[in-house]
Amino acid sequence: MLSPEQRLNVGLLDGPRRVRSPIPMFRPPLFRQLVLCFAVAALRLAAAPIVAEALPPYQPGPAGTGRLVCWGDDGFKPLMKRWTTEYAALHPGISFHLFLKGTSTAVGALYTGTAQIGCFGREIRPLEIVSWHRIFPYDPLGFAVATGGYNRYNTTNAVAILVNRDNPLQHLSLTQLDAIYSRDRLRGAPERITRWGQLGLTGAWADRPIDVYGLDENTGTAQFLQARMLREGRWQYDIKLPHGAPKKMYAGSGNDAAQALIQAITQDPAAIGLATFRNLAPTNKALAVGETDAGPFVAGTEQSVVDRSYPLSRLIYIFVNKDPAKPWDPKVHEFLNFILSREGQAEVAADGEFHPLPASLLAAQRTKLQ
Image 1 (cartoon, rainbow, N blue to C red):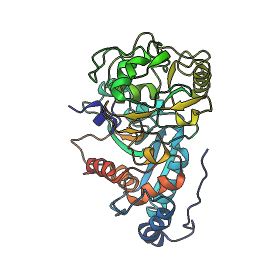
Image 2: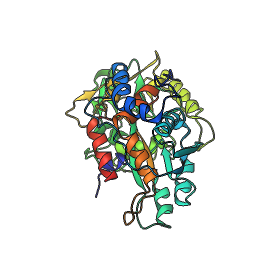
Image 3: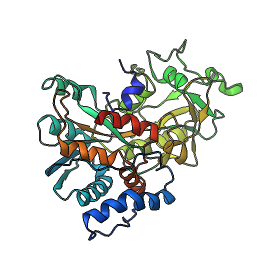
Image 4: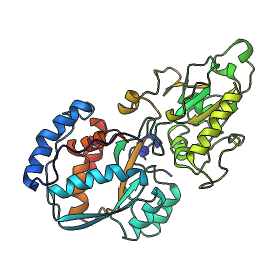
């Protein structure tokens, strides 16, 4: 059985500057293919060194003909436009229809056959898998296709652990966070953590209670944290939502919740909360995070999110309906082959909203194409 961390890599759980493609749209398909394989990657690597030679170059295979329909997260729009434009130039027999209105639309479109590609800005939810299994005896097949952003607006970002700027604490482990936020403590902490002194603070801080602020449990970010931080444990009963945050799904925006949290942490030196690095302000700070109490503790930066050394970095996914007893639809397989290549990941880097996958994680995704 896969651990929660392994399941995150396949998504099974529950405004940036645009860079114009240097390849003119009128070039013949063969020329574009050669340039993509040899020149485009080199040009973009100069600006985005994470797209390294270690990533496999795109080697075109049978692509079939017809239309690929993609439903899902609206955060994919700029990136999917890049992918589909470059891919259609290489394979002129393929056209695309994009309906990107939100991740929640994707799974139904997949199991009804409305779409062949589902774009997920979060992990797939347990109830979505339950619905799937009402129809199919196998899981939807998920691929991590990019690392989430660092501090982008209204998209999938790494999670920051925020405290008041006057709090002397510098770092926390996932084990400690689990003991603060979960009533099950599946990471093995011997007791619940409720006071700052349990985290090593002394003096006036030693007996000060921790004021714990959380998220709507139904949000994608909360479900990511429940898997990554709590190992699928249950949230504590007494976690607070900051005053002014939406009390239920779709009753407001993530920005509303973040602004409410910033205000709560500003007014409460004993507060701790979950947000993104976009929500850093002069009145708060982000703690470095380690996997265990022994560390190492990694500060959240653009680079530590890119290389995924920051433990609360995120992923975005594509899911497809692939019956393991049947051959691949060549249209779907070849498009994924392109996305999970050096050229496909160069489009991620050029777009700037998300980050390319590291070579080791990309290789793990490509094994599912075999």
